[in-house]
Image (cartoon, rainbow, N blue to C red; front, side):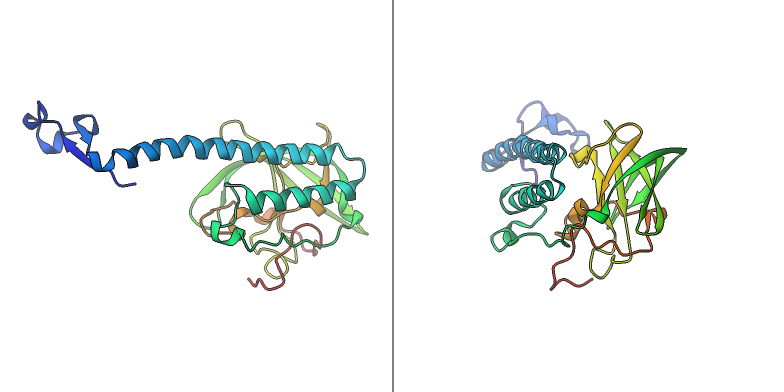
Length: 248
């Protein structure tokens, strides 16, 4: 929001214009209401984001507490659809929410649910590229190895280096760019509540819960992309997919 000010009549007149700061000015009557509105909107938006993340964390807690994996997945889908359709912090643009009919997914396939041991690796800190501007600092701290069918695969697990941190597991696969977003999908992002459970020794990898980053739904978001070391050569037809009419 553009700032608008009126000058204090005294003693500001004796201060050179180039040396004046915002503390030397007062808002004009025309913009007082705008400034007040801006100050009110910022904490409201922050509280709204807090509420969104709490709801996401609660949703994943429900998933972890549901013995039936398919029932947990269906609850997760319904919860995500509700947040996308009606929450102020939805990744969708406001104009798109009224026509929203639900996110698209592959059918649930139990083959894609595994328990994978955490293998500690040599730490490596780097900046993960974003879908647009920016980068996210993260540290590789572990590797998970798992088998799907008769093939063995590995993915790196990262720790977000920002305040508070969090586990982050993005990946790409052979569906990326056609059936799913070209930049990859996320499986874990504990800073935002996306946590499928596990122990310090092993974690749950259920690719049926893989989801697209927010930048798929609106260009106003800039999202970390899956690093090349987490590109799987096989197609992972589980989790969120692009809608049939969407092309890359």
